[in-house]
Image: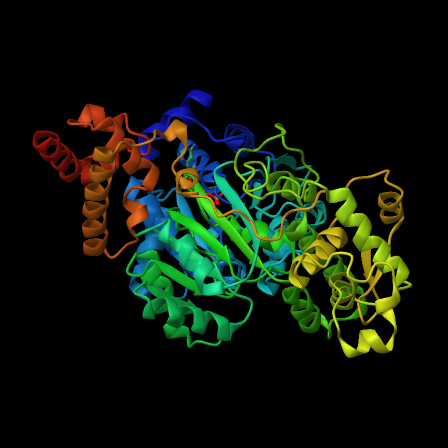
Length: 603
Ligand code: ADP
């Protein structure tokens, strides 16, 4: 069976190797046992059921929460020569009849459906006559209230077992928390499922986190490293998405906003423009993302801190699905913390407690000085194999550390002690810099021994260090007024037993472009090859425009990279390229080969 799977993977998708856990997930799908597969975004979950569906008799039903997601996947499959179809509200009655006929005739291998359709009475009658091999539930976390994307209509899937009896059910998700995982198995009533959980590390994502100082300047610096490439900018507020998009357009960038306040039509238009590469940048709230399978998003910037690390992992994870190196930058400010707190205010007590806990963790992640990859994995109870990820600002030493961190921390913490742990970070920073603020004078705090002790630093710098100390649990913010208190480990710092890690407030701005380049194993391109890559991209765009489908569905960036590097000049060589299957070779091969030959001759 493994041989058959490998052959199918090569023939239809043009891939020679499995991604981690794909082989196990495919074998599990074939074994006839239920399964739950947890892989990060871009881990290649779709293939885990698509390849087995092609290798087995009968039809596989795929449940998917969004029409756009189904459309993309089905378009992509048909383009690879896989007989697939979808039944959703946008399919005309005539097409629906044709799909039913194909399904009965055994001409379809994969049928995509929304949960509502699957559960509708007429439909359950219809499928009782089909030869169903398995049911795949995509984005399975939507069934769980604990997840970040709960969809009430997914709850109906609890009846799947009742309807389908012995037919195996396979659930797929990128949500890594154990609580959601257990809930999926429970809600779907999976029968002794094989549970496969992959590593949540995304080594091709390069993380950078910095304080937001001059938003537009910082944004432009990042975007300029990715000229002509696709990127997502996330903002917390709708008004910010509009503002940022407007300012970027004014400066000559191609950006469109996206948020729940726009009309359905506008949202669809903007999303389409991004997917079809008519615009480079989408500036969005978290309303944007689910159902976006665009594999060549080269950067994701957060203009504000997300409310949890799960959210950050999901949103930043939309970069680099094709495995090429991509950049994720998070611009945060202490104000984001307060903003989220005020947004959360009306939550029921229990939910508020959970959300506040997640928010604090997120803030510690921003202010922390540990490897970003490691910190994300820690959150999901996983570990990084190497000490140095080689793909974050901390491990690559882009962020300078304070040399005398112990002394700096001791000065700050002792000032908090002298203020009887009764003041917030602004006030503490004022005392340390020796401010003449009236309130301070009235409190006679200029008489403290720590008054002016750090006069050589600016107040924002000290406030930043305070945040870092809070993030590392040496100080805590307590009560309604966020008064600073010294934790147990904070007292250890005062005694000199622990040295905190403190980052310099203004980070070094190195030339980081080189680090955002494609992965070495996908071959670094020479300048000539980059020129060819651009030509191939143009051809891809023309084909996509003509067909009205997203460019990355024709060939993804990794495939074009490999083509630009290998420069195949005949069918046989083209089939050796990563991501070129038999059908795509026949459909598009000629145009690409012609361009490559022409390019070679011109050299
Ligand atoms: P997920 O659903 O887990 O986010 P996808 O199934 O959308 O990921 O896959 C992401 C990208 O990786 C797609 O472009 C897909 O074709 C590609 N991919 C999947 N499996 C492999 C593989 N074994 N080798 C190379 N590319 C792969």
